[in-house]
Amino acid sequence: MAEVVIVDHREQAGELAAHAIRSLIEQQPDAVLGLATGSTPLPVYQALARSLEASPLDVSAVRGFALDEYVGLPEGHPESYRAVITREVVEPLGFTPSLVHLPGYNSPAIETAGANYERDITDAGGIDLQILGIGSTGHIGFNEPGSSFASLTRIKTLTEQTRRDNARFFDSIDDVPRHCLTQGLGTILRARHLVLLAFGEGKADAIAAAVEGPLTASQPGSAIQLHPHVTVLVDEAAASKLKNADYYRYTWANRPGRASSESRPRYRFTSSTPTALKRNRVVSAASSASHPGDAETGNTVTGRTVRRPARSTTRP
Image (cartoon, rainbow, N blue to C red; front, side, top):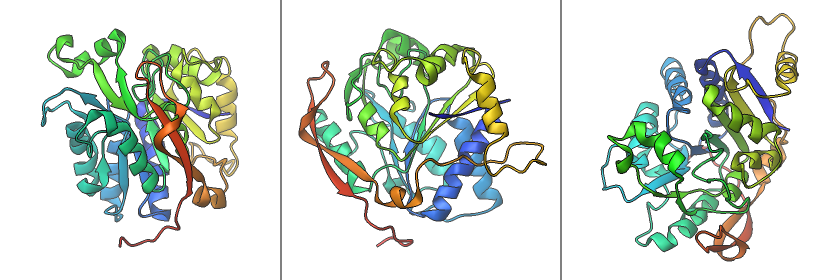
């Protein structure tokens, strides 16, 4: 079951997620982050930037893999996710640019971009903490309704609703690309910790379906129910259609480790994954022939398993 935290405002959610990221980096200086874009994760990056400014921490070895990237935008376009990640994550946080990757960054051919990205994630040891938003269609990443729960990084066609939702970042909807490269639901589910954020009434249906609805490809966000360590951070509006909202509030207020005298939440998530398992978790890599991909692209991929190597606090 996901750990659902209902907050008063998005800034509080950002502080909670930023605290989790900072704690991870303090323990693992070369931590691997899964990076989301859009307006939803901005409070996370902003809170982390404030934390790093107030109490500096070496983040030069942190690695990052973006969830997705548009296909067809000219190089240097300000709304390409390469530009967005650079502007909103790499520069304000002080990450090393060469260690932050996007789908397609190392693939001269679009046909091999997905398999290459999967291999790079696996070679990095897998993603330690994946930041997620959720779209009004229920998509996470750009995995639109109908996406396979086993899908890996591949080309997807965006729904018209998603294009309308994203048109606010462009001059008009006609400028919004119709295709993207996105991590698959299977890729996302291999991350060791998922942190999903959602704000506003417009996300209430998608959150209710993801957290409490049936497990179905018609609601890609429901895939989080398959993961052993998920934290969902939502404001009151986004939580408005959760049937068990009172229970989520109760469990957060009475979570283990919180002192009874605390007047406000301690910025700490519970962990359902033992430390030893986190270090040695088996992760799958993409190649080309075993798990079926989405019918739309006809991609097929294979899983091979590797154990994450022991971490070093210094880069080679």
